[in-house]
Image (cartoon, rainbow, N blue to C red):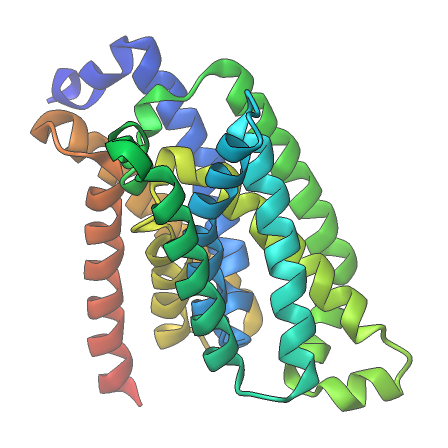
Length: 271
């Protein structure tokens, strides 16, 4: 039995994937709570789709590093969505849907020119097993930045989420806080797409937090269970994907979905 559960750790690529899971999933668990509370599920989904346009821009400009163009475009995209959302000219979900649809269409049109999209199709489901030691260091830096932001700005961000006008009357710079959170989300989503996949990255952000919300009585429990469910799904998804020879990202989402259904049923019974 011990050999069964440790066999996968004999390989370096599995060890690196395991370390990456231990870094990525807590990030998703933490960010997911605020994304769910702020009703930003469409926002994070749009950021994932915008990755294709970022890559396309890099290809058009002849850049040798499409990751940089993808990251820069995601940041600009997030700031633009925040800006338009504050104008009140249309509902946020409408604005996000319009820009997301346009973004992914432009990206697909450029990347599929001449039938060359196949070389980018791997981004749709991701491959956590391909992560390198250098990329893990980048993830550790992002994790540290996120921890600092959460410690310094969470109370203000939460206040803005509850009542933006009241928060501004108390001297809080609501626009700046929202932009910082949007940029942070854009960076984490964009950096993680290569290993998680465009199609399912939003699910990994939303499901653990939504499951936690079903059973949590306060903010402390909300964050704790969200991180716990995210890490649990990540670790067991990685192990099961190894033994079943299935893509890791989808298996993690399946675990997260099962957890959500269990907590939903449990939460409905105790209410």
